Image (tube, rainbow, N blue to C red; front, top):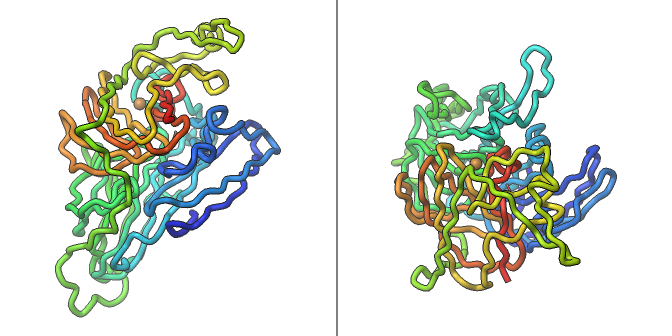
Length: 405
Ligand code: C2O
Ligand code: CU
């Protein structure tokens, strides 16, 4: 975990000691395109033995993370990811700051070896699930928290596949931030978190020796993820549970009356596509480069080919810098897709199916057949990836990019 404060400059060197190339993407951070960590699109891939220096100012407070953007299903599947907390958003300090990092592992339970990270049957459906779940790299960790006081729990879904529906049993809890962005606190019942999504929750810690449990309600029986145990003396007068809102992020407000609406359909229809080479030739990427690679998913009927990073397909949309946009996201598949846009934080407006408060986010979960409208100001120039964060879907076509210029 890296902890810093808003306005700090983060300066870090990636040294690649893997047998394949890699990069680091700073998920959810509104930083310059050249620092976004997407090989071929924003920087050259960092080969074995090579290094790359990332340096940028942290623009926003909140709970973020970073991960490679190459062979992601394997690199993140093996655990390459880290947490980035940018402090300075809490007007009233919390009595504790607890990390709750969810990640599954694809392990053969008898040998302990990794299983295949991508399977065709999984990639074409909901994804290939891990066999072992973990929270903070343990089974169900127990964390001691100051009894009767309000603590902050930063929940991150860093799995590549699993959608969890998180809640807290045995204590009052309120959502205070989504993807690191403050919301006006509301009671947490259950919140669906797809891969890459974060949720900051204020919890009134239980009495000394009593417990509360962070759970996943997705299955019929709630799965315990983390146990909080009250520790020490109760405060003399704890008062009602009423967490103060975090400082609101300073994000550009989209002008909805003037915004251009662009439809994006997420489907399983992959079509062949062609790109022009610099010398005027035409290459059918899906035939020339992807003979052995299945593509199962598409955005606006355009699929991201396996070697698309090296020879990117045309952008999904060309945005004008400074303009407001409404993206009308339409999931026409029977599966869930957490959709992430790089370099911008968007406002999740309404959905035809799911009732959520309007909030800022960098990843939005599309449930089957759901339509969601998101809005933002295209204020960050560059080429920005736009993709599903179920990594097998991303790796088998459900990825593209938009340009801002
Ligand atoms: Cu966290 Cu392009 O992704
Ligand atoms: Cu998906």
